[in-house]
Length: 180
Length: 307
Image (cartoon, rainbow over all chains, first blue to last red; front, side, top):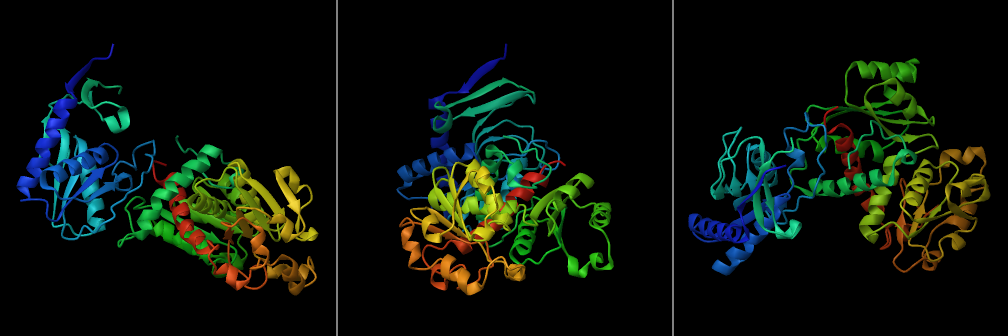
């Protein structure tokens, strides 16, 4: 029987995002020049939620982009399955913007490395900050998050699953035994 | 779904799921070509050989750009400047290229089946860029992509393909693809240009342009291959254009939102009048734009992962 534990429920998840929204505004002294870029797929919904929260707090609309990092992955060479390519959609210039990169889980850091390479191809942001819902450790690259919903020390053989209403019908973060 | 094909030799060998995956992937690649820096690192360190035994501007350039935007190294070999003029056979040329260890070979050849022969001979991925009058799969894929982009679907649409059906690899690949995707395909042309038994491919046949394009959603005009004029398969260009040139009068027979397509190069005033080629119904240049995306998608799916 696979072990499964809920580590964040809907309220905890929402409170974390609210706090992150405040932290982003505090660190950047408001929403000027700010933009959010969500990494497909989990980060996209989280970026959209942060946009709504920032708009509620600040009364300002921050642009949101979608980034698919498939074409920048470093494991294409060694992986057997070709990941399905999604569409990247950043309908605004990144030049001199403060870019908040948003993802659900921060793990090895390789996704973020790929995402930063991709962002740089779109322009020259003033700065890039990273917001994640869960930081589960086990970094393989020198990368850290600026805004973290929850630090979740985990074993490499465990899976962290982030379910969001937009695609799974429920907001929760689970920790479970790996299928691997 | 997982894409497991080694080669892209024809639309005939592709399943509906594979075609959909290729078109979905191609749609995602459109964005790369609109960036200021039109390059992604996906195929860094991969080598693609474009081996063209027939004249081509569009297709060869399109493949070259597709490879380069994915950071692959692309090398063009055209028959006129290669050892072929010294009498080397296709198989020897291929074996020599194979020995240099590329990852994919794109081939256009006047002999039907040449890419299939190569695919059996060498371990690299082969993409058919047109073989004789047989198939031109990347053209059909970019055509289907353009239709899907403009109409939102392919299934249920009526598509008329007009011209020299018998000698057209574009027509053949499109017939395979469009019928698989659920479109209704109509072909039209002078009797000499319609292959016998073409109905078996699931199409209906007309010999008058006006009958063929009545109420259709898409009109695909084929290039009259001037080089075949010597074979006397039609009396004169003027007679052909009198009966089969798409112009502002006969186009009114089609649906109001008809799309006009042409694989290029166009013969203005012969199979299509200039005002139609440049007019509001024409998506001829969208086809070219989508061609790059389709070829990027194929290169990604074939050699993007572990080989």
